[in-house]
Image (cartoon, rainbow, N blue to C red; front, top):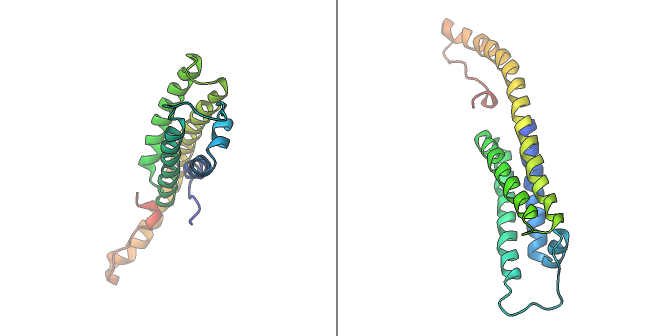
Length: 167
């Protein structure tokens, strides 16, 4: 697998790996996942208790989301990075409200904090990458002009920008 090429890419990759791992834990060892999130794990469940079903569905979603995040990292899909900042902040808000409204246990605030901090880290990474890219872009433009100059003199091929600068 390719390593991320940007700061924001690293934040997305870390979240992707953790989502993938936590999804796998929920699928393979659901009781551990429930305990980690601060939920009680009774010896037996009452009829009509679909906790296991819900955990299966959310763990599969987390596993898939981990795959999506890692694919976004490999392709350096920056639009996806920006999209995640907004929706992870929404997730932070919803999960925080769930804890404050006593819908979820206090320990669940850790999930909210993880989402919020992840969103902020990605936003900061995007900003730093943009600053770094702006200064690198000026160098790339002068490099592209130098490559294109011989082509204008009739050498036969137009200069092309490196793939990493075309985004």
